[in-house]
Structures are given as structure tokens and as C-alpha cells.
Image (tube, rainbow, N blue to C red; front, side):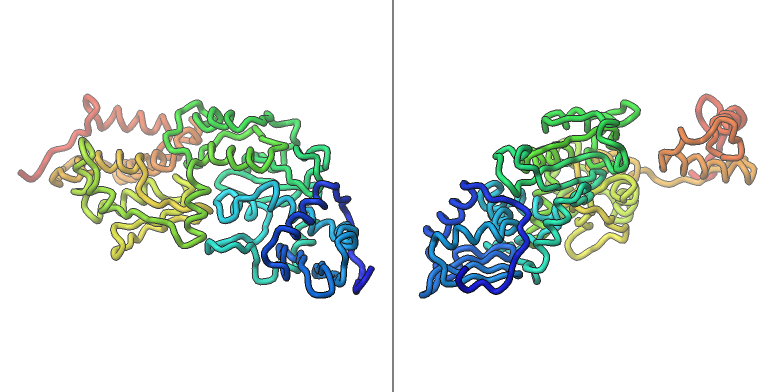
Amino acid sequence: MPGQRDGMRSELELTDAVGEAVLEAVRETDNATTAIDFDGLRIGQDEDGYVLETPETAHDGLTEADLAAALESAAPYVTNWHFWERTVGGEGTARRAFLRWAEGASFDTDGGASDDSSDPDSVLLERHDALESASGVVRHWGELELRTRLADAEIDQRGEPGGRVYEIRHVDDSAEPLDGLERYDDPREARDLVTYDDRGRYRPLKTAPSLVSGWCFDDLSSSEFVETIRAIYPATIANWHREQRGRLDVDHWIETAERQSGIYDVIDELPREALEWVTEACCVDSQCLKRRKWHFDEDDELSTPGGDGEFPCREPCSLVIAAARKWTILESENEKTWELELTTSEMNQLAEIVDAVADGRVDEIREADVYDGANRYRARYLRAKRLTDGSLDADQTDD
């Protein structure tokens, strides 16, 4: 082969369709020097003929027939190019960036046409090996475990080498065999999975860490993969992509509150201090998997940690707005001083009950564990002793 410097491993056999797609791209380009420059594969033309380069090899002075033959030796690069340019496409889209992130590839973050990273050439074969392994490339997205693998040609819907096949399951099912999970293949079925938690309670917040486990979407195409995630965690891919590109439009509390109308018109009266308590109650990792980016306003940051989630929260959600209405009304009440009789243990027990309810661990407290202040029998005893008609026996000491 003219100009060949060294050899290259070949793990895939190109189909005629893939080879022809490359030649078409070379023929049709306006930039003959680098008709293809993608993930370490460079194909172009100079005065001596066609040039094909990868980090492992270089060919020059090629005729078109030579180039077609040389493509086989660069099969991992060529099939990778074909997958991203002919199967996925969508340069600059959130879908493409997310799929690249899912397999650990660099992705466009500035709206340009390049998928280059600081050293993309050196990583394609390592990524190829990981994708080809039994476990594939695994990433986490909220409570989801995402797995990307190279598809066998017969599995790939297009029947072409180098395609990807995707799997989604709950992180708690990471070690479960596929046969032990309920298997799905239609993204629309994800909508039913996210509706209720494992106790059958409606999930008003889709990004709450209460997704049921025991299921799996497998053998998904790239489009099915993205569609399924969008059904489980709506808008998270789009907002993540905007953030990656520095284009996340954040609506802070005060501007969100001031545009409310109807019964929610009052929430802009919520005290600044109370908003800290709102975010501590609703917007921490234990309650929502989003990473909060909004604050009181652009120049007034909240002290409550925003969380460590993979995808951002760009504005107060409808659940926070609804809860804030109630808290705004409650905060409008004047504080009063009350006098009631409690033992020290009973005072401490009230705090334990509040903690147990706030942390959602009431159901975890065993009935025999009377040492826990939130134990059901302890609480019933306190009610029998200190409450009359559902109220504490307390006297107001100020007017």
C-alpha cells in the first residue's frame, strides 16, 4: 500500500454501505484537505492522491480504489464515524451530546461542528474496547444506570458494524441478571414506571429519588434510548446540554414568584429567610435528583447546598411553588408564646417525631423499638397523655 507506515488492528469488517458512505463524503466535501476529521480518523486529498490517517497508521498517495481498500484496516475508526455521522447525526443537538457523554466520548459544548476533545485521537480504541466488553460503558443519570455497548451486526437495526445498543435499568438493579428483571423495549412504557413509587403512591415529582426498581429497557437503539430517558426524567437532557454549552437560562426565585397569578400570587411575600427552609425541605439530594441552580435572585445566593445531581434545575418547580403558597400563608401568622408541661424526654421526643417524618423513615421504625421517640407506641402514649381532642394542652402566655 503506498505510503503505509505501520499496521493497524482490524476488529470489524466493513460493509459495502459503510465504505461507500465514506467515499461519498470524500467526493462531496468542499474541503479536500480534510474531508473527514472525526475521533482520530482523517481522510483528505493532496496533490499526490488521497490520504488516510489514524493515530496508529498513515496512508498517502492513494487512488480511490486504494482508499477503499485501506478503510478496512481502519475499521474501528470508520465504523465509529459512520455511526455518529450517518446513524446518529444531529450535530450540535442535545441528543447527540448526550449519546456521546453516555459512552464517555467528547462532545460539542460550544455549538461548533467539532466533537474533538483535548486528546481525542488516543482514546477511540480504548473506548472501542470498553464498548465491546461484556459490561459496555456504564454511566449514571439520577437513579438510572445507562449501559452502552457495541452492537453485533445482526442486532444493529441497520445491520451494519459499529452500531451501538443501549440498556437502562435502576441503579439498585446493577448486579441483577437480565432475566431477573421485567424487560421492556417500548419507550412509552416508561411513563407507567415513573407514575407510582414502590408503595403505590403517586410521584408528583419525577426527579424524586423514589423510582421503582426491578425493570430494564434493553436492546434499545440510540433514539429509543434518549426517548426512554426523556420519559423518565423529562427535560433533563435538554437542560443538561444547555448547561454544558453555557446557555442554561436560570429563573431565580423572585422573578418566578412575581410572575405567579391566581392563588399562587402570594408567594412573592414569602420571607427571604423562609426560602432557605423551603429549599432545605424540597431541593436537597435526598428529595430531588436535580442540582439546583436558582437562588433568591441573581445577586443573592441561598446558603442551602444545590446538590450533586448530574442534571441541573433551572427554576423553582411546580411542587415548590405549591408548597411555598402554603408556607407563605403559615409565615404570615404571628408567633406566640405558649406554656405547656412536658418532661425533658417528651420535649426530645417531639423533635424525634419531626425528624422521623421529615426524613420519611417512620415506616422503618420497628414496633418493638420503643427506644425510638418516633416509635408508633411511643407516639400514641404521648398523644394519650398530652393531647386533648387532637391538640396539645398548652396555654398562650402573651396577648
